[in-house]
Image (cartoon, rainbow, N blue to C red):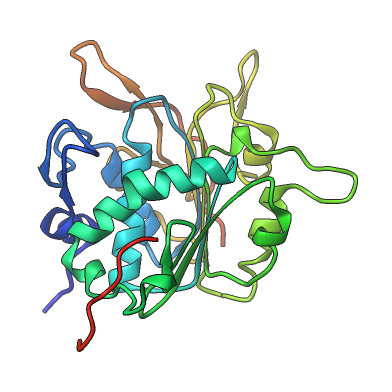
Length: 273
């Protein structure tokens, strides 16, 4: 039997409560169909880097939590999630990740037996570890190799210093030991920052507005692909577009081609500390 896609799995297993959404119940992409392309790109084995520039209130944090839950349950690997600072990382973990993980049966079944192994900034599941930290903590970022590197709100990251390189460089360096690594980078600004633009070498530029907001999935296979609201080019380029509201209040995906595809129970289980 063919395994479910990331979207099929999420819509069967992710339960949302009123702490997370105004529409509690089973997760659905029906109200934000543009996130389907994001989730499919993240789950595509031929994609190793996904960059996104989101509008505000477009489902970024929920989409990220859904993907992490899917990976933990179906394709576990050591993971690192970096946010602008540790306080934001702790808050995201407590208010988004933990509630979703606790209500997702496949993920809940992988909670550690010892509560000391499950804290808001380090979750030691039975099959993998998810670490969260701030961009201003280079020691935490560079202390271990990871297969999955998530850099959230890159435009708000702490700047590099004379002694330390950028948090993005440190984080991406951690993934090199894993051939099947995944790198997810995003930001909320209307114009893509220097760090994000360096991670997106295939972006097109347009006179007057710099790099166009969008997203790029860099592949190892070189094959073309079209999912969700993506557009594929003759050169294998693909983009996930900037999210913004349409006139009827629903979210739509708009933008131009912006990226280039490159060559990628005997014990009670614990709750968060």
